[in-house]
Length: 315
View 1 (cartoon, rainbow, N blue to C red):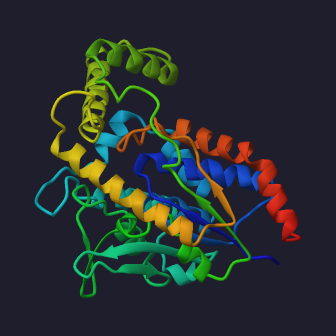
View 2 (tube, rainbow, N blue to C red):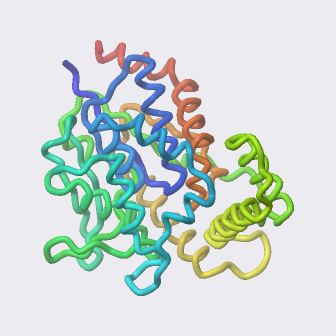
View 3 (tube, helix red, strand yellow):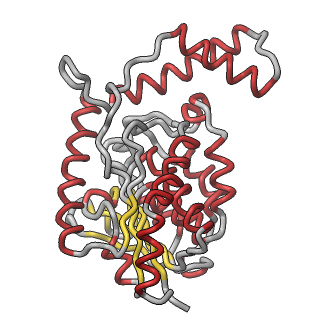
């Protein structure tokens, strides 16, 4: 049997597109059996490698702004805006609680040694620790201490872990880059309270059949506004001085994309899939359905190329 590898890149909330990519590849009869992930790619990759992808998809597809807010244990005391334990406690239920070497498919996650600047690959040991370290976006989630190392997001050194996938010994390597498209819409304009309430009322009506509890709807609207405002803080406004979070986020993205371009030129994958998720903000995890659809469409758009590459390898 041919070894098909997939390298899932970083991208925060954009990363739910990886679910759509894996789903659509499966419909084509292509099922990667070795998985490398970075940051959000490690989350989705771990769920896939443990055959929990549909469970993860069902969970994230139900997200509302309020759900996202509920998973945030906001704190500046531990080296990040979010403590992270609350979300990973819940996420562990959907990606598995075991050691990497006991997973159904070979899996690897990449993180960064904060003090040595080294790339760290997890191919054994606690899955939770590996994924948690790989996702620790500097300034947002605190670094993770494992042994004598303090680890942060793997995207700092290897945003699309092609090298990790190659090292796993594959015949064909598929890579998924979540930053292959530039932003096309106006930079996430703040949502007004009235429009937010209107959208939230619509959601509540659809889910519950009615929305008579105005106080409850207002509460949901405020949750939506808070998450929207938080997303705005990660984005560069067209005018005015950028916020601290926007400067940090944009600077990280510039560094990551430079690393990615250099690595892609030196070691390109056999297939590169680039979902168009440019309009999904860093913290907009409640846009999962939109991201998943983008992942599916990205595979469909290059289906003929995928079939050609696999035919060349007689797979």
